Length: 291
Figure 1: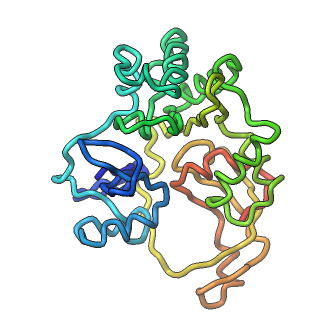
Figure 2 (figure 1 turned 180 degrees about the horizontal axis):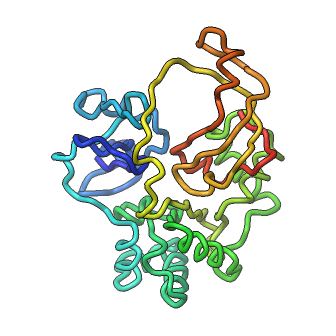
């Protein structure tokens, strides 16, 4: 199985993450001589790993049980940064893939503009199970990487922004992750992100900003799960929400549902929203309302 790492704070026993690719005869990806299925929903990992209880682990940082891979079971660690450099230097079969051709044009721009090491590749092109329907999933690191990615996504000869009928395609892609968003509100949020369509074949491309290696924001944070509450909240500060993991300052406006006793008094103490999902990174700005 191939895991996608979640966050940058891990217990000594495991790397936290969810199953991104797993063996399945009904899948459409080839990896290690087998047929694999792609997964993009974090919660599905619990079912995929039902026969491997050692992959369930309690995270003090998250305050809940999550999936992960025991450190001693890791066979290969994939480096997003090194992978993109390697693809640029020796593309191999990627050069014969239509989406891969667009990726190579983008990697050439990255190399020519001194951004190698600031931007990496993840997803199917990272692990080698790409096909003609693959997206291009980039990641950038720290403020310098964010700036480089911003310049890249302004190169319209390489990447065109979502517009017209393509906006419906983008909405359908994202709405399953962004609960309660109307079409107009979600598209407004999505336009803030580094994403678009490749110029030649129109493949989806996005870039998720990751905190820099020296960023220790979450190093000493611990959490405890006490229940669930769904609220309508106003974003009061988005400065720490531009990178993954994202943290937004919020002010609760309305309680929608709760399993917590006396939620009205408790809600006043909720001042921040934290997310390890890239879908929420960079989506909100101060003054926005979210669920």
